[in-house]
Length: 282
Ligand code: SF4
Image (tube, rainbow, N blue to C red; front, side, top):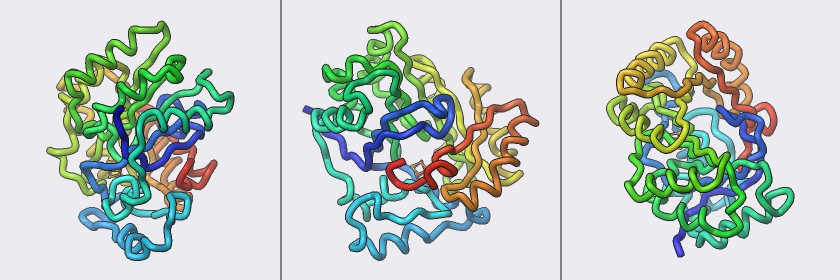
């Protein structure tokens, strides 16, 4: 049986993108190929907030105890190795049992599964078939992978997903691709990978979701969109305000919505911020 290193599992409302407002089970895997240390910082500067949290790691016994950060990656503990002991390695059977316990009716009805991270399409791709073929997962209809769009699907996993999508009418696979712009601190050549995202469109619906704050970010988003379109990407594009804490989010959301309208793009909120203060487990 396969195992996954699991940062968090919880039941909530999807706050972002295509499934905004849909009741969803979140499975957050551990590990990421990026660090995105510059969100919310002046260009070229890196946040030190997670270092201050890591310096007091002995205070935190589980994710719910961890403080929120206003700069850098807001899910830092799901990939920074200093927090790895908070994330157990679980067999897929144990994960399914946990999911069944948090679903409101103890079975899948109209809820949606979000596999997120960290970056959920790292090596964990090999474990997802074991998870999805479990008999208690048979009624699941909709899955979203929340990815940074840099990880190629393995041939085996791509075949598996194509098969999964065809087994029952109404099944939907979505790739919510939060491609990282330079404002995140990541390098363009590593973060903007149009060919990989175009391949996701071969097995499901893919959309791009750019986190933006400044005019410079919006220019970067438009340049990135041009690269994706030139490679053949056909999906929707969302702009989403930066802001893992309410004070930062509230500075940005209206302006980002207006920019989205101005450029004919979709706007994604981050409903988990006003609703739940973006607390871990929401
Ligand atoms: S890609 Fe996502 S999870 Fe990874 S560091 Fe960046 S924001 Fe965090």
